[in-house]
Image (tube, rainbow, N blue to C red; front, side, top):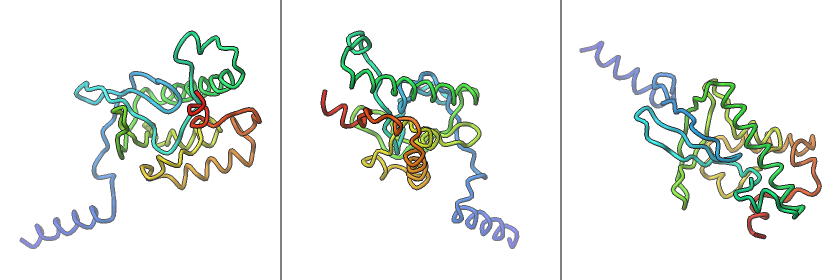
Length: 181
């Protein structure tokens, strides 16, 4: 009886202290990188989940031939940065074998799950994108971002070092670009 109480006490202490190493997170297989802040994954049962990255907003990518071949300089600039962000996400995922873990915090009006996405080595993709100036902190999604401080610090560093979009005086923030369309 005494050992059983001790086991319960240890379990409760670990649970209260947030020791998540006792409970492994489910790994998801990345099926598609849609753009610089959205991926499609499958769970262990094969169910597809569309995931919008919490914390950040990446530049837009072209979604049609008309957009792909536009002469509009603002749109072309947006799409160039968006493609770079998309390629960087793909590169990060490829380096870690197409496996990620998710911390889902909400869903959006398009039915996507909003969450933090980590590579199998624990790297937070949103933090990498912000540090490299390929995504901007998106204030409306910060409430759904347990790692908001790290992502904000990464963006501040990119800004101060004029990295990525911060080196481009013509760049328009993604939410401003979308509102102009």
